[in-house]
Image (cartoon, rainbow, N blue to C red; front, side):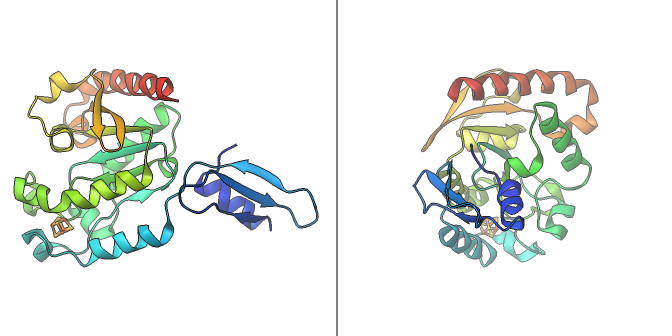
Length: 234
Ligand code: SF4
């Protein structure tokens, strides 16, 4: 079996020692004190916590682009670093900037519902944005800002090593894939992130779906397509 963060916490709360494999290893031993037989649990390659926290610290202190001047805080990302699904949006909005977490508020609730629709909880996936700082007035990210911030996301993708990436909205998809195809033509196609090689599926941003609820049906088709691609990659 595999363990997610919630399951790990549950085992720890039950007094079961959980030995987490070092980065790159593939097994965890969970040993119940009263049971001399170790329970061997297979575990996906885990992110090195020290490396992850180093990256988080670098982002929190980052002044590579002018967006650092207007931020309340950076928005690093949230979720399970052993996740198989990586969700990538555009940039923090006002509420995300205040709370330090991506996809909160109405768009965040809709994203949670979209994930639930394909059997995923928010804490089972990892959620990040192309930019870690909020652009003023929610304008689109500028190319130079994306170029400055991109190495952070690239390192997150390498460390998480997901099975699939779901890109939310035109800005996220175009910047992630380095193409300028309109979002309508990106839907329903399987793209690939180059390093590590991970399938990328594109759908609408939840904020857009809130403004255009008629498009929710297309988004549902995209999620089902993503689920098929994910299952093929297992
Ligand atoms: S948007 Fe990215 S590159 Fe720019 S200051 Fe924030 S963390 Fe640094």
